[in-house]
Structure formats: C-alpha cells, structure tokens
Length: 160
Image 1 (cartoon, rainbow, N blue to C red):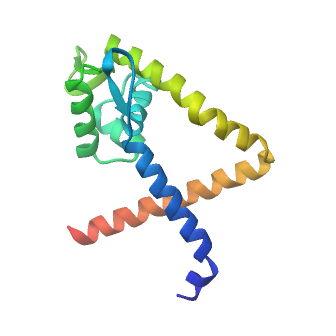
Image 2 (cartoon, rainbow, N blue to C red):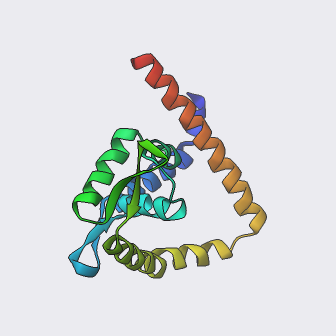
C-alpha cells in the first residue's frame, strides 16, 4: 500500500486519461447520408479495412474485446447498413464482415475528421519528443497491456 503514495499522481492521471478515452469512444459523429458512428465503432471498421479476412473471433481478439462486444457492435453497424456479414466458399463455418459502399464512405469521412480534429494534434505533440522516449513509452504501455491481460484472465478464472 505504500506504493500507492509514490504513484498517486501517475494513477490519477491514468484514470483521467482512460475516462476521457471512454467518453470519446461513445460520442456519435454524423457523416454522409446522415450516418453516424462512434469512435469505438470506427475502430472496428478500421480493423476490418486493415485486414479483410477477420472473422468475429479474430476481430475481437485483435481489438482486445469480448466476442459478445464485437458481435453487438457488428450488429449495430450492420443495422445501419455500414457493414455486411458473409461466408467464404472455402469456409462456410465462419462469419466474416466487410464494409458496404455506404460504410466505406462514412469511414472515409470519419478518418478525415479524426485526422483534422485529433490525430494532427497528437502527431504534433509527439513530434516534440525524442523518438527514444516515445519508443520507451510504447514498451511501457505494452507491458501494462500484458499485465492487464493477465489480470483479466486471472479474475475471469476465479469468477467462473
């Protein structure tokens, strides 16, 4: 418990950043054809664009969310005609997803909006720091991610 005093400011700032990220994830932004998507939905769409061969399980794994969460998001996007599910002839068992034409247009607008309103500022901020420091921060964040994965797995095992 003595460690809490030493890391109090770090913990407080981390919680604030995570809370702000959580708020950002749920904000709906309207784009072409009166379609809106949230940050979290756009992240799913981005992953689908990056790797067109994602099934539901691999998509959930890649994004670090549960299969139930990814299914819920996919269903929302599908209902708004931004995504569609399909099966491959070579693999009738698994369900894959892809953006519709409308989804591609909305996602492109979203990418441009995010670049202009968020990413450009973050890149400018990051450019002010030494690349070695940024690399060290990435190592730290990956270590934290791994620890959180282990904690989640341990908690899950103990609650089942």
